[in-house]
Length: 282
Image (cartoon, rainbow, N blue to C red; front, side):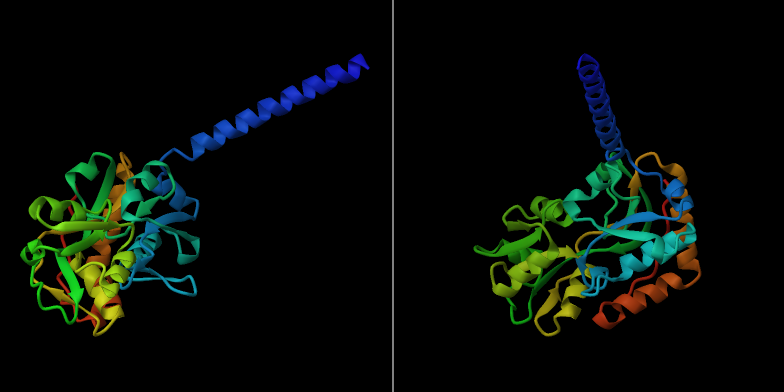
């Protein structure tokens, strides 16, 4: 009886130690930033993007991904040796992007991710691969809003997404505006459609995608009033990965694939397609 009990205690102790070890290892694995080149060498990449931005990053009903950001992300992956079948897509809402990168939940993010000095303190950026400007989307029959100044009229409500650069900039530039921050642009579009808000602000190319998705219901007004440089976000200090992604973006531009992808995804929106940017190897 004594031998059996001793063995039982030893067995339970061993199991307890094993559980602690597994939990500890799992915790470490979930909080370490990923290495783009190591994962690419293994034949698999986890890429973050938006799932609700038509023309840029949209998850279709059949679960395929479409849009310009998706085209850029896939071109980069192919340049690194990873085919589309080796990509796992992960939704990357604006407010969660830095966390997703720092916690190792994605290898890189291509999702209308504006390069800013404050963000560069937390993550690294390759690119820019596109330059946009902040604009306004209103209902097609609303002629009372012609630009951001119009939103300072009493009672006007503006929708944007929490954690996005447009939300931060509009509050600073136009303090009288009543901002309504939602968790996604699609929620803002729904609020605009229902008359809960009077305008939606974000980058003009994003707004053009929504206007194209709902023809005759919305329109863009005014001129772009900021400059937004879209970059590919990746782990801070992953210089080798950043350099390779920059190489991929430059090849995409020089080969004509960049313009072809933009024409394919945004050409029917009526949005004037801009020239490609120059990569900034900071």
